[in-house]
Length: 163
Length: 163
Image 1 (cartoon, chains in turn green, brown):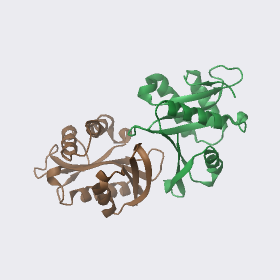
Image 2: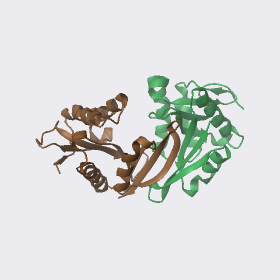
Image 3: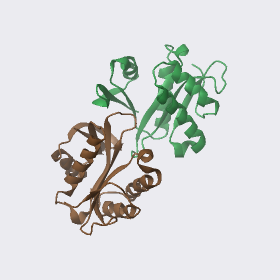
Image 4: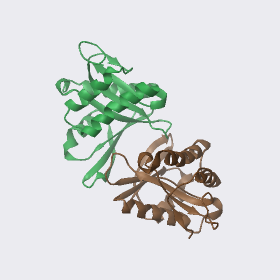
């Protein structure tokens, strides 16, 4: 596994855009949001932004050469629950367990900060079967499916894991 | 029923604070947030803030003399789902059906703007029994209870109504 890094740099804005785009899974407006979260963290800092990161740097080990990352944060109205906002691994680096390692690193960070549970929301559409299988394989339990939540025919699946 | 009004004024910042405080149901930090949503709407406008309001003015019919209100908005990642953020009626004006009328006005507004469902999140603690009975009496179905969501022993109940 490559080294993990929790401090984002300016180079990570482009890296996140590259990683997320490579997966082929996200719309342009979603890709913009992924990059914006890094910008908000850099501009506002950890506390004000609420965006925590784990980056996996490539073999070069340089910031900006990230090949995967996770973004997560405390849920504002909760004392103990956290949300996973993003997790993505560059298409060329997938199937080597990096996604699982990133998720476990995020969980360890949440636990170290007093979090008791990590929540993940994703689409219930068949196109996201592999995504949901990944979360289930990582120990996440399906809490509920909100039918037609995102759009007619596109439900929201909510997973959680006690930490 | 008093007249309903959808445009907030500067006076509503104090009115919301007064209404929410009168219920005895909210912590000081929650009361601050309730008032801040009115400020954000006034400062940023409807589109940028995403905060829609319905105010019930008292017999005087003046802005700033509101005796109840609801705050709601579209869920950013959804095409059709909306969230109810706040609903409160001044303690002196409760038990006359105003809460229900405010909720129905919010639902009508959501429907008129293309929304298909309104979601409500509240605590699963016994102290909120009356709150949850109110939503159920207004036609909301319990979707799911997320155990220990807000804090250990304080779950989150999510309700929804198709519009």
